[in-house]
Structure formats: C-alpha cells, structure tokens
Image (tube, rainbow, N blue to C red; front, side, top):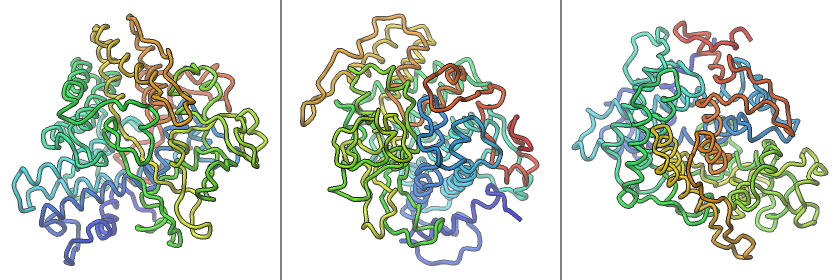
Length: 537
C-alpha cells in the first residue's frame, strides 16, 4: 500500500537530520519530538539547514519544480520531442492526476514543511534567549511560508501544515485559500520581526527577503478569491519597506544585468537564492539521501543548447539537452537594443568546430530545434553550465549555478504594480524606470560587444497593469515567475493565437489555472479533494 506523503513526510526527516546535523550527539529518537532532536541553538540551526537541503534537491527546486514553472508559461516550449512525457503534459495543459513532476515536488514540499515545523516546535525546548533562538526559528517560518505560498498558487486548497500534532493524520482536511494566506502572512510577519537586517549570505533570508516575499503574497492575494480590501496597500507598504531601507538591508540593483546570474558573483540584488553544488558522485542509488540528486542544479543542462562545444576546453561535459527552449515569438518580439535580451537568450554556439553557429541552423543538431536557448542558467558568464567531475564519473547534468528565488528588481516592480492599483502613476513610473535604466546599462564587456543603448526607453506616464506585466515578463524572464503572473491576472488568453509556437495549447480556464494535486494523497486522505478537471483521469 502506498503511504501518504503528508502523513509520512516527518519520518523521512530522520535521515535528513542525520545528514545535516553531523554535530548532534547520538541519542535515541523514537519519534521526531523537538526535545529529542534539539538542545542548543546550534542544533536548531542544523535543523533549518536540513530544510534548505530539501528545498535545493532535484525533486524540488533542483529541477522538477523549477522546470515545471518555466515550461508551463507562455515563454517556453519543448525543444526535444523525445523528452519525458510529464514535461510535454505540463507544457501542453494536458497534465493528469499522476503527473511525474507533481509526483516529485509535492512530496518533497511536504517534507520541507515537516522540517520547518520540527524547528518551529522546538523553540520552547531549546536553551537560549529569544534574541538567540528567534532569528533561527524565523528562517523556519520563512521556509514554511514559502512552500505554502508555492503550493497555494499551484493547487489552491491544500492541507496546511501549521505544526500542530495530529492524533489521526488521515483525518487531516484541506484548508481554504483564505486560511492558507492568513497562515503565510502570519509566518512572514514573524520573520520580518526576527530575521537580521543583512543575512550572513543570501542563501539565508534577511528582512529584505521576508518583506519582499510578504509584498508578493499580498499582491497575489489581491487578485485571488481570498482578496481583502487592504491587500494592494499592504503589498505597497511591504515593498516600500525594502525600497526605503536599501542601505540598512544591504540591497541595491546591480549595475549590470549580466552580473546577477554569474555563479561566482556576490550580488546585492539577490534577496534569497539557493546555492547549488555540482555533484560528481553518482554511484549512489538514485533517491538515496546524500548522493545523486542532493542539492544539485539540473535546470542548467535541461535548458542549455545541445551540441554546444564552446566550453569543451574547460570541461568535456559542458553541453545542454535543449529540452526546454524559448518560443520564437519571445526572441522576435524582444527589442534587440534591450541588453536583457542578450543576457537572457543564447543565439549562437560552437558546433562541429564552427564558431558562432546561429540558432536558425540548430535544427541540424540532432534532437534540437531552430530556437534560441535560455542563457541565464547555462551561459551566464560562460561557466554556469559547467559540470564537475571526470568524463567517467560526471553526471553530465549537474552545475553550480544559483537559483534566485527573489531579487530586488522584482520588489520594485511589485511596488510599481501596487502603485498603479492605488492610483499613484508617478511613483509607479519611477520604479519601472529604475529597472529600465539598469536594462540600458550593459556596462561594456571584455570585447565591448554590448554597450549602453537607448532601449528600453523610460516610461513617460500613464502606466497600465499590462505595462507592468510586460516589464515583469522581460525583466524576470525564465526565472519561474511568469506562470504565477498568468494565473493571478487570469491571462490564459496568452496561449491562443501565439504563433509561431512549438506546440498548440488548448488552455481551459475552468481547469488549467490549477494543477492536479498528488494523487496518492488525494486517494488516501478523505479531507483532500482533487481539483476540477483532474478527477478520475
């Protein structure tokens, strides 16, 4: 009999904490009671690190979730027709209740929630002052809020995990969207209070990440069934908290858009990221904790151009799979003078010794199509796609590229959108133009290929929501937020009449704004119901 991942996730954490809490003394743990796991603040920190470890796994942000978000949007399609069926189904709005992507990241998401709750529940049993304990616990609150925020946007009503022990886990019932948002907001408010102004590094959240995330939550709730009248004001207020305290929180727009995505660049713009570690040890059984897919980025290889020989002098394994590629309309409609286009899209490779082999000829490369490639992961500064290890031991798919969960430019655009909704056009224009001014500043590169230009020009006023959505589409291209924008603004119409595309998508607004919930949990938990359109598929 298959076990529900919601009811069994906590037991899987025994192995997680065994890996991430190497400094814990050995003591018998029959159940994951907080007093059995944590005695000191240092041990509590190890527990939070266990949550980050799960967040970065291949089953969640290392590939499954990040890939699903990108391919589901209107900006990408399938480049390799032989790629996994689960990816085609996600792209074509043909997902069924047993979709393989959901089957991976839903269970992992609930394991992350269990990890966060284990830390939160230990707050009162760990020795230390509030000033020592609460900043650590605030990171667990942030993690819990983030995973719930991902899931409520994808699935709607889910079982909300607030950490309360259940006498009968099989009696758990899903929560309303309104209640889920209330829980997310409460968690982020605690994080706002206790997270540091400037974290030790951006793989841990600080106040800017928490306030920025809360601004995003209010912005999304404002267009949902759970909307409250103060949501746009609250989105604006929380975004402004970051904007008005740039120096205190240590954030700023990077001068060059190019630098944000360099794996070895310390960015002041990144508010929260996942540090991925290329892993050349793939002799461990897939799925075992500690090997295989642990914290390794695989989105790089999925989106990199197949047949590319540019980096072979550095590493013979440096090539992509062209599984997920931009739609041609993205390239054709993007102003070539906008430096973000050059950074976001890869249009030439070295193939069979021919340098600058153009994407218009890439259909000559086996399992490839004549489409540009996504450059933010594979190329970045020319090394993001490189894998470690030898030709014999390397997986040919792992990389050290960082995954950006939130950056400051998004906060500025949240403030702009909220300002438009609140009727403050001049302020909205100022935020958009800050983003656009940076987009014009290529800053020059080593070969002076890219120089500052006049595009995109400043907005002169009269901003509309459509203008904001377009700015977000370009500024945050291929960073996993476009699908969320399509859902919250009910823009399913972008999938019709959008030729030349790689596929036809028959978007059904009655079904496709939500994804199917994990069928094992739906089958085993009477209080969890499948989303409309996916029942019995």
